[in-house]
Image (cartoon, rainbow, N blue to C red; front, side, top):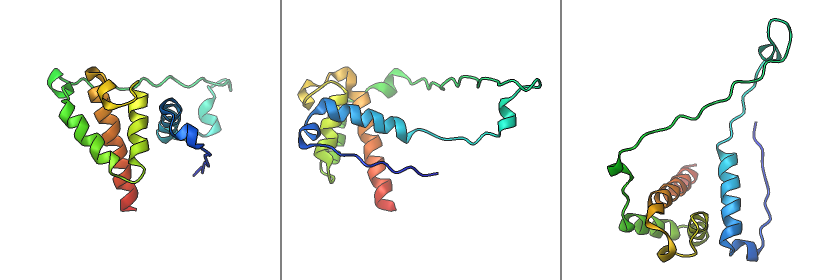
Length: 132
């Protein structure tokens, strides 16, 4: 099943990092959503009563301290690459806004790994879109 959404964004919202951050988070949440079709009988127990689904516990990956060390240069390079793409400036502002910064100098060094991860994710999405 495919669901198509149409968004209307004003210039003011487009230039507001907080608005774009909320939009980015909402879209990111939707992008990861998967739908499963479950037969009705699978939802009932042997007495015909509804069985609540078991909560899914997310898997956590442990990373070494070395793997989490991201330099300012790495983040600047990735953000620069994203900024040079079509619509990249707005995407960079959105990423920085999500992390609580208006520009790169305001970005806290402890947020570099998260900034890099969001940027790489966005660059991969662009590459996948271009491959289609």
